[in-house]
Amino acid sequence: MDLFDKLEGRPSPLGEFTSDGYGYYTYPKLEGPLGPVMKFNDEDVIVWSINDYLGVGSNDEVKDYDAEIAQDNSLSSPMGARLMTGNSTEHEKLEEELADFVHKDDAFLLNYGYQGIMSVIHALVDRKDVLIYDELSHACIVDGKQLAMAEKYVFKHNDIESFEKQLERAHRKKNDDGAVLVVTEGAFGMTGDLGILNEMIALKEKYPFRLLVDDAHGVGTMGEDGSGTGTHLGCQDGIDIYFGTFAKAFALIGAFVATDERVVEFLKANVRSQIFAKSVPMPIVKSARKRLQMIKDNPEWREKLWENTNMLRGGLRDMGYNVLPAECPVTPVLTKGSTDLCQTIMRKLREEHGVFVSGVAYPVVPKGTVLIRLIPTAAHTKEQIQKTLDGFEAIKEVVFAEAKKQQKMTA
Image 1 (tube, rainbow, N blue to C red):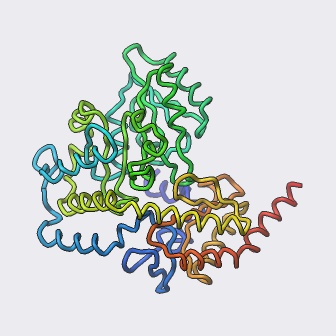
Image 2 (cartoon, one colour):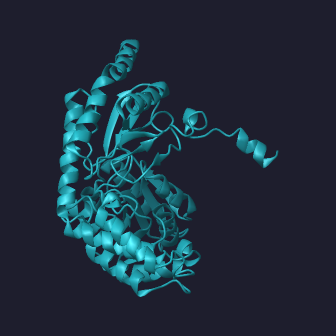
Image 3 (cartoon, helix red, strand yellow):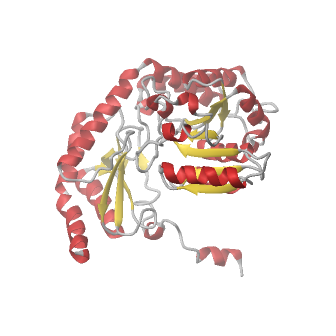
């Protein structure tokens, strides 16, 4: 069979959203300057789908600095991979500052978050080892698991009994010279709940393992100093390998992994996606240093983020919406309904109320459910939040009608 013919008939995990909804439900174009209000189909909309948690991407001081460094630093520089010709003092300073920020010995800068954690997992374990991961892990962890040659076990989401069962199984079956790596998330990006890190770490004495935490949604937003979910939960020391990305709170490209110096030394020589890829461009490195410093210097951004998050969640709950008990700023609204309802919610909010939200239905979430995920930021205003709540109030009957219909059918 011809490969292209085979691909044409292969189903997409996005189901009905794939082609018919292109440009609207999938691959929509939010245009104009980054911020809480952008252009969609030439109309102003309040945006709740961008992970610029602290408003860094629309901050005037950051934008001015980016323009300034772009004048003096080419996006081409440094040329080559870090291993050969792409290293610089700026890259090393950023790594030192990141390690200090998340309270680890050392850090290694990575080109991208998704690619980075895949490659880190691949480098850390071999066929003698066992890899254990949470069933709701992000796709980048799942893909990293696929790359890894280790034996793989999965535990039920945030279920400590299931986790311990897999730990016991791993220690029973692994080679004598094999090790155990556990991978989970600090803050889960779809559901908004936190990983059960303290409970997991408490099992280290009984079943020795190393813990890798992907804290993409926690770095910059969680913890008193913004250093992440581990700090927030009081267990940062128990996280052996801390992974953070710039794609959320930093509103930038890139990522980092922070851990012991000896492990960083190993990763620098074994993470293939960095060894054989071009170094992070100088303007991005300098901008990351600036953004990190501003995140540390402006704790009021996190305070504003949580103020906005609580206002949005409280308003939605008061209307009767089922807002999942998220512990990070991610605000998931779950309702019963079909793909059609998911599309209706997005379309009505966007076109009738100027509110841009993103939603998912089956097969991304279980059949018969719709998840609308809102991302509040420090840049949103109270007026924008209220207008958004007014929009949800206006479509409430449509949303709840589907749930009532399903209840009658199952009664």
